[in-house]
Image 1 (cartoon, rainbow, N blue to C red):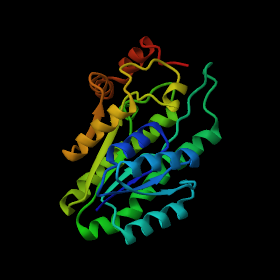
Image 2: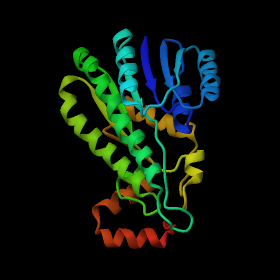
Image 3: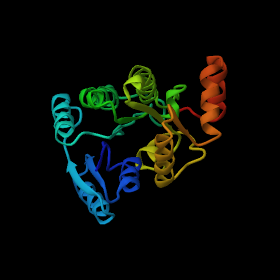
Length: 252
């Protein structure tokens, strides 16, 4: 039986991933911050044939997060880990700037908790010489958006971390992919200032992520041509990149 662990399972992409993988022969270990939605999602996944267990706690409690992953790994072995939980901040409608506490919470969740998840899962995966890790970055990890500096920084960190892990672990049979979505319809996406071109629905994003993981792609980025445009911003001169972003109204 395949064990799939998903954090942020009550968010748009996380819940879509849970539904995508829900099938007979799959055990879903779902973590989410909204208990009622988590139970509703679990019911839908069980109806599709999956075995489901749910967990509801603050991932920023690093000690508890590590203990949880270690326990799941020891009991069942994690075949696929989705480090998907995350949050966003922005500079405000009038460009007043990000709230410091919100920035600190974001780094604790997007970066520190994600690294803790992976670090706790790795010993078992390396021992078995198998397993797959999907780190949820963003196209904002290519070049930081002026409206979301801290979020962009956190996603750039996950991109670099995932690429480094892949180079280290590939010879040991542990596969690592960095997922870099563009705009996927969600409450977090709608709350973000600025335009949202090429918006995808969560189910479409989940299917693209699954296809990419099955092909063991180092980067799973979408949609085209937005992913290509963001990559171009990262390789061009920063002044030109900022100029184009201003033309596209990526400002507070």
